[in-house]
Image 1 (cartoon, rainbow, N blue to C red):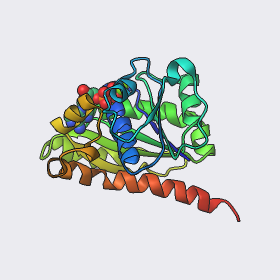
Image 2 (cartoon, rainbow, N blue to C red):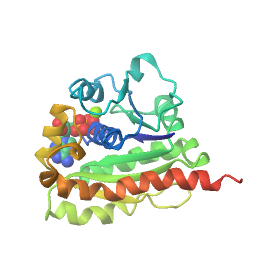
Image 3 (spheres, rainbow, N blue to C red):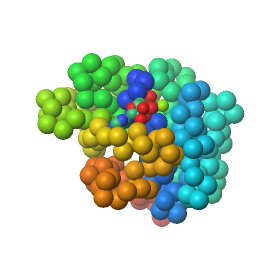
Amino acid sequence: MRSVLILNAKGGCGKSTLATNLAGYYASKGRRVVLADFDPQESALDWLAARPAERPAITGIAAWRDGFRVPRDADWVIIDSPAAIKGRELSDLVRRADSILMPLLPSAMDVRAANHFIGDLNAVRKVVNREVRVATVANRVREHTLAAAELEGYLARFSLPNGKPFPFLAALRATQNYVWAAERGLSIFEFAPVKTLPDREQWVRILRWLSRSGKSRRARKPG
Ligand SMILES: Nc1ncnc2c1ncn2[C@@H]1O[C@H](COP(=O)(O)OP(=O)(O)O)[C@@H](O)[C@H]1O
Ligand SMILES: [Mg+2]
């Protein structure tokens, strides 16, 4: 079982989009997926409610209300989180995760806000102690804009207390494909292969990083 926390204190940066697309991806690959929604707005659970019955099932949990114990037989636990998260709430969530994906909008304001948030995150010592991995994903990037070009430079400045930079995994383009998928309870991996090809290609490094992080964690254990 591996758990991925989608985290950023800012609203609207793409947390639920990342969470639902990951959940749909792993479900479509035959994995047992739990989608735990810690946001009282329940965007991830709304998405799940819209999911057609004939699509591979995903177990949704209203974790913000009911709490949640990780089901043992799950292959992937995807955790969607609320905006403005800090303090105890933040450390409780980080403790549940193997990997953290942080979506970011490509604007100077959002990157600065993320910098403050990363300060909070780094203060949660557990992140480092348990070697929870953190990586950033730029979202809603309009191709050929200055913001897109400068983004990598901005993101290179983010680092953990141990000095290791956060990997910057992907720049996901702004496209109606995500909006369309969100409305229908699908991921971009589950419809119109030709139309979504550029988007699926942008996810390759994210998916590889997530699968690698689980393997290397196991590899570190002796025996
Ligand atoms: N790459 C994208 N292209 C177009 N629209 C997007 C993209 N990512 C997110 N959106 C849209 O932006 C809005 C906010 O995204 P959401 O995932 O709900 O953010 P958060 O969960 O961080 O508040 C949603 O309407 C979503 O469909
Ligand atoms: Mg959300």
